[in-house]
Length: 301
View 1 (cartoon, rainbow, N blue to C red):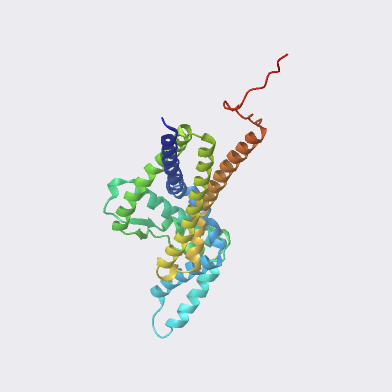
View 2 (view 1 turned 30 degrees about the vertical axis):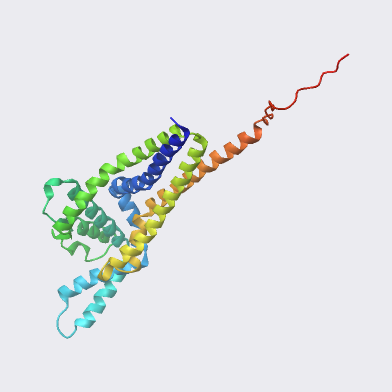
């Protein structure tokens, strides 16, 4: 194969590898990061101490309770009392227990619906009875007098409507397959591009730089996604609380994107330094003799 053709084929394969690397990282984050209930709960747990998240959840709960009990001329006073009580509760250990139990229950329900093709046309619902029971146990352990009187009722709360679940299920199945094949294809294309290159060291340097650029673009996409996601959220979940949740969920994705940058730069720098070192150690090539130059003169005796 001609060197120019080998260089062109190598450039195409390496370009494909550099494009697939961040896409595979994103798919892997969805399939193996967000889909892991333990990691999800662990990532969301610190948000129970975040002031913005805590106040947003407390205000939402307080508004719901106030709508149930408030009536008559004392409506405003009741709402104010319920809001203050909810914010005080949000600073207790019982709130942290309920926060963890609620996140676990929601994640398990959503994941089960996304993986079950037989659940088409049905919304995702969560039974709050286990969450209420956990909170009651925590309050009882803290010696709260009315804790044992809290009723544990099976209340189904809709988390996602049916049409949203069906749309997300299709995307989840695509990402689940892509999480395995995209990284594998990226590695195969990169190795193939380096193998067919006329100069393999240059190809390795190009692959490293392309991988670093792909990781940087992925990190930029995470930042832009934060602005778009937080801006599109309606009502009480808008603002700093939504940003804190987004940051907690995408922490591993940001880490993976910067790892791609570090890996690519390390490979490119190592290849470049190796090339420079070999050029310095290689002895200079003597000039080729000129066939047109006159030969040495012979002296006649």
